[in-house]
Image (cartoon, rainbow, N blue to C red; front, side, top):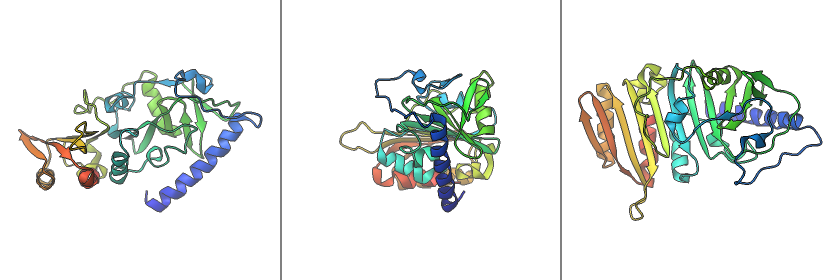
Amino acid sequence: MNQKAFAIFVGAIMILSAFAGFVLRGSDQNVTVVGSDATSLQVFGVQGNLVDWDFGNLADTLQMAPESTVMAYWLNLDASQNLTAAAAAALPQSLGMTYGSQLYSTKIERLAKVYFNNTWLEFHWIKPFALGYSGLVVPYENYMMIPTGTDYVTVMGKPTLFGTQDATRQVIDVIAGGLPTDNFTLALGESADLQVAALGRGGSSMPLSGNYKEFYLGVSTSNDTVLGGFNFTATYLQPAAVVSQTVKELADKNALTYTSEGSDVVVSGHLTEENLQGVLVALLKP
């Protein structure tokens, strides 16, 4: 989706979302944002099931992702504005990243997006806020899908789900007890402020056109008060020669460590705020 089409799409979604929110609340009700000390999911006031899932890293996200998932990313929006801006420039567009403070009555603190079966779904971590409604819901497995456009819905919870009805149903199937993807191995046990994982079988739309078996990238803000910047790592399982060469050149250019372990490649090290975006764009764009 190009930038202009994406902007038109977002505008339509936000207008329809505002209208749906008005109808859902009723003319005599107001949405009240609950303070940061209110953590109960029941504050949403939504009938039926609420999503209630660990959401501290990409591995948690993949536990909600269908078996056909080929790419996923997870981002802590509170970690660093520079990291968020760099991620937004390098990753496929998401409504949560671009309009994180406008989609709900409270900001999105963490988000993830997964790609599967030629569709996608976003996960938004928000503080619960009161959302009263009397209609305009599509029940599925006792989860209430609230329309936010012609074919887009929101399912409240932590995290809240956003996507098409079809994509949302596939993720609810997993949350309700279906099988999640087990094709991602590199993200297991990893934590970072930005995490990205992709399978080469996803094809040309994957980072570096999917010329590898599996890819993982993690970026965290550095605790070094002198150096600042970010701690970075990227791992490729069975990369093609063109990927290995591209990654090695990028590592040399940015003073990163390049390691070849059998058929696998690892690049790691420290990135400054100035070169973070360039590295992410180089590695995450198809």
